[in-house]
Length: 280
Ligand SMILES: NC(=O)c1ccc[n+]([C@@H]2O[C@H](COP(=O)([O-])OP(=O)(O)OC[C@H]3O[C@@H](n4cnc5c(N)ncnc54)[C@H](O)[C@@H]3O)[C@@H](O)[C@H]2O)c1
Image (cartoon, rainbow, N blue to C red; front, side, top):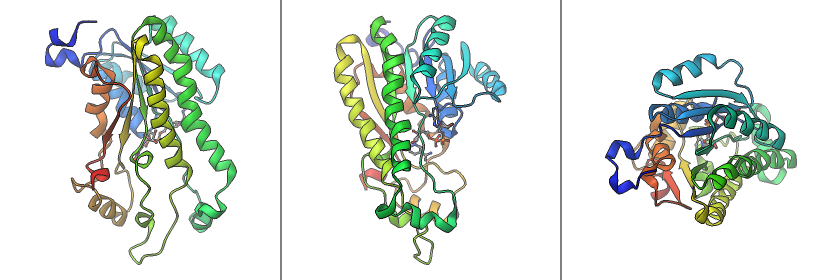
């Protein structure tokens, strides 16, 4: 690894000869993270609960510049599953350099008829609380422990934990009202709690592995426009300084920054990319 001072601007972001694991890789943002890392030349390990139908995505990543692609199912709440992923990635690529802990659940209430009652804090179900903490917090811990330990052994690496603006500020429950002011559901208590825990874990691990050469940072996205109704999009957009929701590809630059040597002196931080939502 060259000292950043000796590197050109583009080589600061270069990820050739680096292996990057992305969890939750088949989701809306997971795919964008893979695309960003591929465009910088990384070898990509794209993992999700089910990557079975994703052969064309592997082809796309190669076409974008990935120097290798491994698609493999793994459940971030299962140590066995992550150990199998680690072994397969090491066998194919020999090292692990970047881990993007992106997998999470956002605890959507499925039935509009019961959504309001089910999402009320006073009766929020313990099973929902436990499930989201398991995926969003324990999953980040486990993937960091099993995959990150390889980085610590090698004396280098970058872990990017995907958090959320809702790990930093409280949800604005008024967003989930109709134009007539009727609350349709409440954002759950567990999602912000889990993302706050991810931020705290990020600082813990950055401190723990600082002298092992492993940097650990969080990336906190704001809301992505993805088929929400026009009233929601307008309300959300008016809460940002840039006057719009994020596009799915708005996080590519921030992710590459944290994954690469461009952020060689950055650890333990939270990079908020939210169009100014949390600044307002
Ligand atoms: N989309 C947004 O507006 C937004 C805003 C802020 C933060 N985020 C965060 O960004 C990340 C990605 O969000 P997204 O919108 O792409 O979500 P998504 O639901 O589209 O993707 C999440 C992926 O995680 C996978 N996953 C769920 N449980 C898993 C498990 N146990 N093991 C392995 N994989 C599992 C799912 O299969 C899915 O493909 C999440 O951490 C989310 O909290 C998203």
